[in-house]
Image (cartoon, rainbow, N blue to C red; front, side):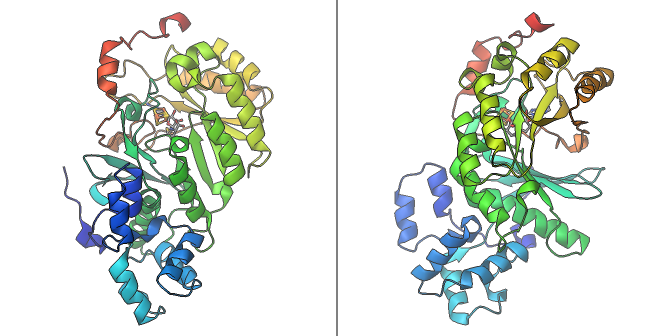
Length: 408
Ligand code: SAH
Ligand code: SF4
């Protein structure tokens, strides 16, 4: 395992933060300690009004929050001493009470196709991944929201690892902060290499709703990263009540991981479907569109050989989504050891895509990027201290046979 390099990034090593303690479900003692001034507040996770409130608590004028946010998010600064337009007294308070700190980078990977991946240490044996995918007209950062994932989708390497913990807002935002810093520096362009963010890394964002919401607000804020709602996409396996909340709180672009055209198959591939079946999920998608920044939902569909990729599946899928304006993103299954599944052959993916396109749906087939560094979708595995004993449960049930024979 590579050694993280805080020195190179000029970041402050420090103690656990308030948010991290809360997110980790630690005892309130940690929070008391923070309140007593023993722990630093990681400013990366504070939305504007929280930053203002915090400054007020330190007897500073709230409008300073904007300057501070710009230093932090726009310039990628970590060192309060360098924020020369802030009063010296404020800089002193900040360096005593606050920090701007990303998780330690355990490993950096560069793919031959330009994709970059960071493995980040989020403590207690958990590590998560962030991936940057450069394209001609944009730079997309894929962020993680949880160490592991409890949804346990049949085809997903992250799910297979079980669930470690939710990330705090500052740990989600830190992925963007860090990527901008490193990419900007590497290209000699200053911060700002990331133009789009997709919540498609490790974890189910809508099962870590509060931290996800705060991270979204910071990413959208003009004094934060200033990203447009259309350029930030939350991907969900279908947590219906939280889709409704996101619609109210912060409607960004929405991708829904569909993967199956009927409940029987989806129950097996995405176990959350047993709780929120397709009819409820599609109704939530329709409601979401009333507030969404784009006039379609993106349906993601992993193409698994002989499981969900037949012509009959395509026909059933078209009937299913009849009432939801949508576009499709077909993702050739990315294999991982022990999955027991195979990627659909390219001609099958093409035939499936053609059916959707002929029915009038914009359909893209995701190119597999960063394969050589295991940075493709569903290959993000990080390291997870599974608290759900998933491995044991999986070992008990013979998951290699579930529901798959019946659809061949
Ligand atoms: N939990 C969220 C977001 C993270 S997963 C969700 O499920 O939507 C991001 C995308 O990668 C999802 O569409 C997911 O279904 C897909 N994915 C997971 N494992 C995959 C694999 N092995 N091959 C291809 N895509 C995969
Ligand atoms: Fe979790 Fe998404 Fe993987 Fe399913 S596909 S296990 S929801 S990360």
